[in-house]
Image (cartoon, rainbow, N blue to C red; front, side):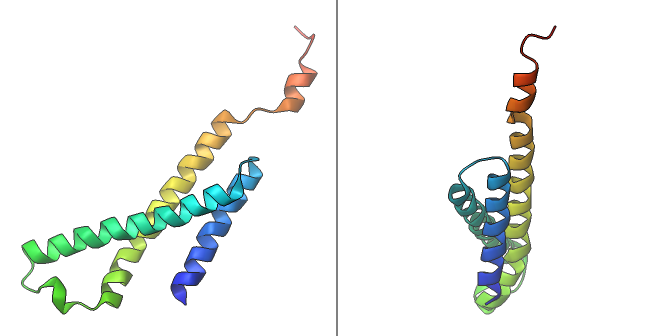
Length: 107
């Protein structure tokens, strides 16, 4: 249940960002969700490698729920990073048509 709520809010924030800058909201909502899953996957692999190489315990001894909870913050951080990169890029590339129209003919 927690995962569904998390996916909903990630998709909603990315869709709202896309709507604010007149972009296609479904594409960015899916991008946000994919970023979350990619971040948790990469973190899960890194955690598994650390467990196998450096710790006495094996990764097989850890519950999937615990591994998922350990990887969740990395997925959230990857979403936050992509969100702010997109926001910065959208602000940089935003053109205001009102200012351009008013500037016609002025020196």
